[in-house]
Length: 336
Ligand code: ZN
Image (cartoon, rainbow, N blue to C red; front, top):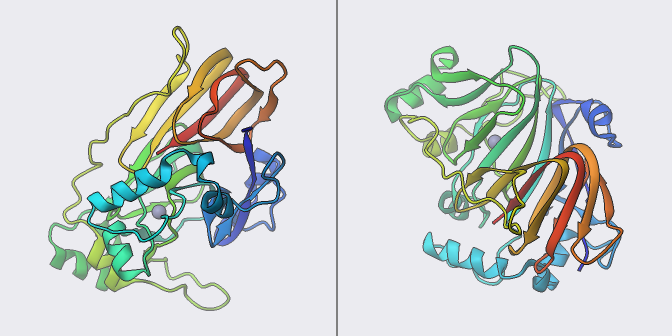
């Protein structure tokens, strides 16, 4: 099986911008384009496969009809959900979703539920654990992660009485930073930031505060009750997360790989190719996003390979085996 390339789905947002044209050459729908769903099988933005054996299929359809492309991923998911006390009937959804976010203005202050809460309250959806690789940040930009309430009563009071200045915890953000955001963590990406997000395949966001903004003359919906339910109190700092394992590589190769995070939902790594390096795709599947430069991917035993460049997103299927990356480029790669 070959590389599976995907066509992005774009989302216009009140806070979105137009930077994805210049940065990635994308044909975006407007100058308020906030999100590029680059690898997604979610019903709110299901990517179409471009070229190759599965040309024209939706990623969800490939997942549902060709489990062999994804190795034992379906079973791994079922086992994980069972360990969390959730019995999935049938095949769970494709586990991951990769996005690029262009925040021209601040995103709402928000929180996501975990699997158990989402399953119970959101029609069987997965929860949302997410992580951010910061592609760019204007000087002086900050990001909201965490809050200052010490008890749930204080949390409710701060939210209900709009004590935002005391409530939120803001930290500086720089290009190249990486953040893991667990469910229950209050957060907001702020204007001037562009990120690549790897997340669970979920679209459940509870909006705590939206700065009093109007969309088409009306405020966007808030989810105060759910937010007070799911925000972890007190905020204890970013939980220690396992840096994880690098990708498999033949002896003497693989030095371009930096593990970023490994949790029970995903394993995310950064590859910095300067010249040539080789790896082995021996995981159920591997999602790759080229976030800088360009080069070539060549499967072991083949001679010509394929050009890949900044803005490309693709999946290496199960059993893909050895491959070489050549050129000057940076990639973010994820697996389960
Ligand atoms: Zn979020």
